[in-house]
Image 1 (cartoon, rainbow, N blue to C red):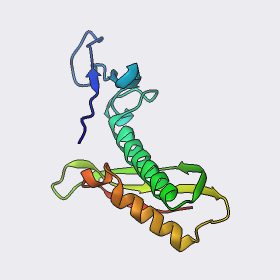
Image 2 (cartoon, one colour):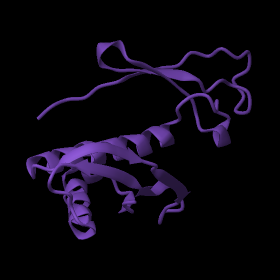
Image 3 (tube, helix red, strand yellow):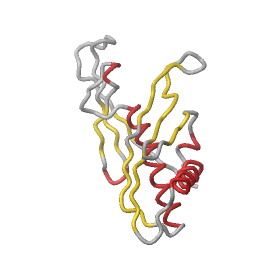
Length: 149
């Protein structure tokens, strides 16, 4: 098994620490020095120009699904040329009345080349296999729907 880590750092830059006034901007640091400017979602007084945790969650799930899909396709000797997903997460109240990203819709568009191009049914099965193998999808309670283009 493996470990994965991130460093999240925040420093107060506002004079006030009142809820409406304090800054939400912070940084996420990852392996090899990669840094991401992050903030709360705009609805929670965050900076629109930064990544918010809910967006990152949607991107993490989408990226994991894509990487697993590529692995499944490669093992089946299919050639994927492009993969693009316009994923959407929905923040709603969960069964406990708490705000949560309760569902995510993935809308992957995949282009294949080579002598074998999967049918729509085969493509759906590839996405199903990818979903079942996706570590992030296996780690969350969010309902994930895949709507291939």
